[in-house]
Image 1 (cartoon, rainbow, N blue to C red):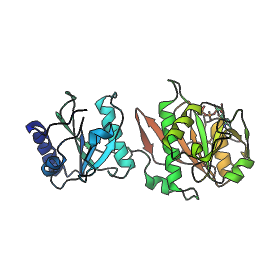
Image 2: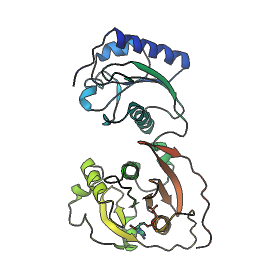
Image 3: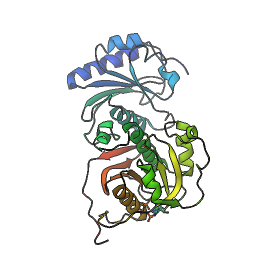
Image 4: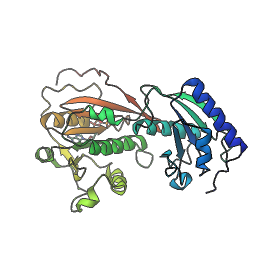
Length: 310
Ligand SMILES: Nc1ncnc2c1ncn2[C@@H]1O[C@H](COP(=O)(O)OP(=O)(O)OP(=O)(O)O)[C@@H](O)[C@H]1O
C-alpha cells in the first residue's frame, strides 16, 4: 500500500473542503483515502474542523489515530465509492462520531482511485443511520447494551449478506436465559454443543463469523446476557395469547414475539424474505431495521397493522 503524497492537489481539495464546511456550517469533513498521508499537514489545512479519516484497511490509516484523528475502517475495497461513502457515514452515526441530521463534507476519489478528486456535501437524513447506541438504550432491559449491540449488528449483517447468495433468516433470544431454555427444545443438531465459553462468545469476531455459517439451520440462538451462545437450533415455544403480530409475518416472528412476552428476554428476528431485523420486547416490535443496499436504513417505530384474531 502506497502512502498518499500530500501534494498541491490534495492540499487544494482539502482547502475547498474546509471552505465548504465553513459555508454550509457542516459539522465534519470526512476524507476517504487510499493510504496514509502527512496527517499533520492535513490537520493544518482543515484547521479546527472535525476530521474523520476513512479507509479500507488499518495500514491505510497508519498514524492517523496517533495524530488525534478519528478513523473509520470499511474493508469494502471492491464496492463502488457511493456504497463505501454511505457505509462510512452510517458507521459514523452508529459510533456517534457523526450526529444524525448533521451536514458532512466528504473528500474522496471519484474517478482516479489514487488521488482525491471529488468533494460532496451530504446532509445525513435524520432517519439514515445504523441503529445507534441511543436507540438501543431506549430498551429498558437487564441485557447489557454492549451485548445487545453485538447481537443486533450480527443480525443486521446476516439479513444483509445472507449466505452464499441466498437470503437467510434467523432469531437470537437474548437474556433471561434460564427461563428461555425452559421454553426451548432442539430443532435438530446443535452446532455449539460441547464448545468452551471462549468459542461461544459473540464479542469475538471469529465466533460471529462461525455463527453466520450456521444461521441457515432451523431454530433460534439462545444468548446469555454476557453474549455467550448457550444453545443453537432451538425451537422456542411460548403462548401466543394476547399477541398482535403484523400481517405477513410468520412462525419465526410469532415465536420471537411470544418468547419476549413470556420472559424478560429480547428477541432479535431476521426475516429471510426481506432481510429486515425486528427487535421484540414484551411481545412487541420495539425497533425495526430495514436493509438498505450495502448499508441499512433505520426506521423509527412504525405501526404495523396487526393480523386479525389469533
Ligand atoms: N418456534 C420457533 N422457534 C424458532 N424458530 C422458529 C420457530 N418457528 C419457526 N421458526 C423458524 O422460522 C423459519 C421460517 O418460518 P416462517 O417462514 O413461518 O417465518 P416468518 O416469520 O415468515 O419469517 P421469514 O420472514 O424469515 O420467512 C422456520 O424454518 C424455522 O427455522
